[in-house]
Amino acid sequence: MAILGCLVSFTSCNDYETYGEKKDKERAAIRNFIAEQGINVISEADFHAQGDMTDTAKNEYVYLNNDGVYMQIVHKGYGTPVQNNERVTLLMRFFEMCIMDSTQVYNDTDPYDPDYMVVQRTGTSYSAYFLSGSLMYSTYGTSSVAAGLLSPLPYINVGREDDETGHIAQVKLIVPHSKGHTTASSYVYPYYYEISYQRTY
Image (cartoon, rainbow, N blue to C red):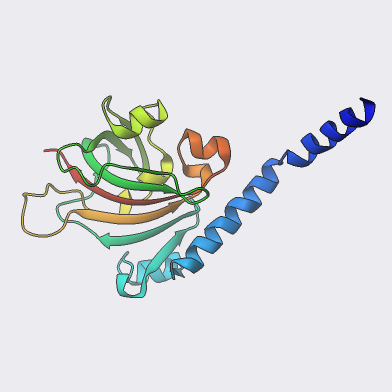
């Protein structure tokens, strides 16, 4: 029994992962995803030099140093960005995939059931929450919007779809756990997103 107890204890210790080890796995998963998807990572300096745009033909993603988020702007959108001291409700349609285990959550196939999030901009800071009934709210049990999902807002326009002909804002993101939702934070998992944003009015 003593030997068995030692074996159980040894196995448990081996199964335990430190936070540092989990972060190493996350970084490796992101590197592998970038390689597998043929993503060309550019600097913020190059991104700004290109008019805060990414070249989708080259599959460019900009690495945002402050957030650790990788972002591709597919369509910048029309209308205007969220203004300073403005509080606005945005429609968000998204596809989400966990890079570690490929679990998916999405609402981008149903045009009548977007998520609604209320966004407040104060200076260069953005905060937001999901309204009840949103898929993100029901999936993760919180109204809080992951910081990584707000990272595109300084760089996109959020006009309504019927303002004029053209595309609403669309982005692709790789969001590390530190800027993700509660599940991402708990498990130290990175997530991939395809998201569109537009105003409700």
